[in-house]
Amino acid sequence: MHTDINALFNAMWQDYIKMTPSAAKVHQLLGQGKAIINDHIALRTFNLPKVGLDVLAAHFEALGYVVCGDYRFEQKKLVAKHFEHPDPTQPKVFISELLVEEFSPELQQRVADLVEQIPTQALTADNFTYSGRHWQLDYDTYQALLAESEYAAWVAAFGYRANHFTVSVNHLAEFSTLAAVNTALKEAGFTLNSVGGEIKGSAEVLLEQSSTMADRIPVAFDDKTVEIPSCFYEFALRYPKADGELYTGFVAASADKIFESTNVKA
Ligand code: OOG
Ligand code: NI
Image 1 (tube, rainbow, N blue to C red):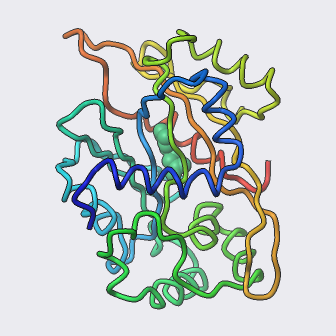
Image 2: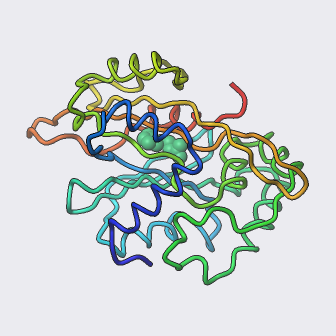
């Protein structure tokens, strides 16, 4: 496990921008050359004991992160938790896991076959949270997973890495509303996730979020290389609670739609 929080996030960012060619352009557009504060990053996994949410969380808990909220997504058959660091300038971490047992026996078997291939020592290695996939995967298996769960297919194809970074709009010098951020992104040619509207949430729930649709990159399956959705960029604007401090949680109804930023089918 990493002992240096900045080293961990730098390595995760380097991996993320390889998966997300548009991220560097978005970064330049919104930051105008200045540093950008990340609101949060997110990771995905399957809930099998070997590699469940807790296994990923351990890499962040070792650096001082503590669990601060949990969330359930009935329809997508997912649960998630979010973690915060005592230093509020460090990104929050949102980790979800697929409830594998709620799917068909065929999906359960396919996922078990993937997870079994992860070498045990990889799970605690420094680089696990940006190590990608640890298994063979043919295109038919990807398609079979996709038929039941976009999420399962994404994890199978991309494995363990940040599926998005999130710009803290509160900290941007040039933009003060999420609508202004969205307009700048669209004018620059980026496609936003419009599921349930471009802005998810509101001042009333203390959090507004938007995201790009994931980039598409060529992914090497065992039998062929195919362009599929990889990772996306998110934008978050937080509002103060009654005590004046910014809300630090997530909003399940909004998160439910952010997950769809990696959908293959519109
Ligand atoms: C996570 C989706 C939820 C948020 O900020 O609400 C989320 C994912 O796509 O893995 O990131
Ligand atoms: Ni997010």
